[in-house]
Image 1 (cartoon, rainbow, N blue to C red):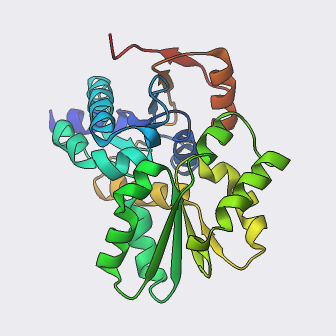
Image 2: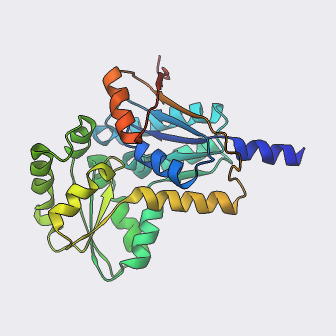
Image 3: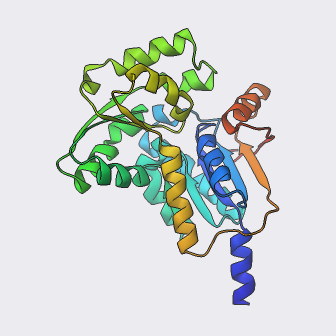
Length: 274
C-alpha cells in the first residue's frame, strides 16, 4: 500500500497559480527543468492584476484557487505570483496542510543574500509586492550588510500582458522606471514579478552590463526541483499531461498565454466565484 501511495504521489501534478499568465514563465522553466512532471496551471484572469488589489482580496483569491488545486490532487503548489507570495503564503500553507507550498520570493532571497552581501540590491515589482516590503525585510534578515532599494513598477505587467515587448513604448516605460532615483547606483536588480522575465533582455540592454539583472524563474525552479528530489517526489514517467485553467477565458488571452509558455496550449475556463 505504501509503495502504491508513493507511486501515485510521484505521478500527481504540480499545481501552479498566478493572477494571470505571468506565472507561465515559471511553468515553462519547470517544464524545461523537469520534463517528466505533470502541470496544472490556474490563471485568475477574472481578478488580474493582483498587484492593484487589497491584501485581504489577494488572500481570498489565493485560498479559493489552492482549494481547486488540492481537489485536482496536486502533490505540491507553487504560488507563481509575487503579489500573492508576499501576502498570501501563510494562508495558502494553512489550507494546503501537508501538501508542500512554494512561493517565488524566498528562493530568490536566499540566493541573493548568500551571494550579494556587500552589494546594492534593487527590486522592481507590483504595488502589492513593493508595499509589503517583503524582499527588503527578508534580505536584511539574512544579510544586514546589504543595501536594498525598491520601486513599484505597476505599468510593466499590463504592458507585457498587452504584448508590448521590445518596442518603442516598452523601451520608454522601462527607461522611465529604471532611471528613477530609487535605483541609482544598484549593482543587482531583482525582477520581482513573474511577468518580467519576458523583458529581461530589454532591462539588461538598458543597463549595458553595469547591473546584474536577476531573473527569478530559474532560481525558483532549481529550488523546487531540489526539494522534490529530496522528498523523493520526482516523477520518472515520461508520459505527461498538462492542463491550463483560467477564471475568465478570451481567445486573445489564449494567444498571449501561448506566447508566455512558448508553445501551444489550450485554456479551459473554470468559474470558482459564482
